[in-house]
Length: 180
Image (cartoon, rainbow, N blue to C red; front, side):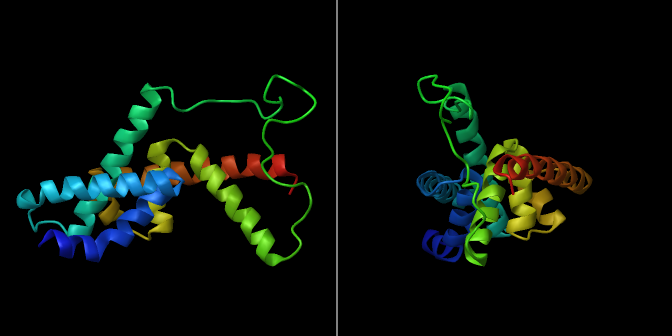
């Protein structure tokens, strides 16, 4: 398989995975680009024992995991209070997640639900987020996820179950906080 063919066939899938994992377009572009650079460098070593898509997903996941580890080491992940203002003022919140007003129509309601889901996904442990994205959003089978993550299928199933429960808890908290 040539580099151009690999890119043309899988670029959208790699970018979408990177976007779902990272949560923003700029990081997703960087992750996808790094993944393809690594894939092209390793193309000569690629064995047709696994599908090219699975191989690229594994590379993308590894690039993302490395980025998360690097950002944690550099204290990139900052925490802040939702109850205080920017300068410690208690009269206004630092961040408003959503308006307390109910959505005006179904499209706005769906957008609010999507925002809550995205915030809950972003709040999950990176490993939980990755495995849920692969299963629930990308529709990957347990076997495919096992191949991508290099975990046993039974481990994949149990981690997905735990990740779903963690997501339910996070979404419940966000829904309560939003007053919906």
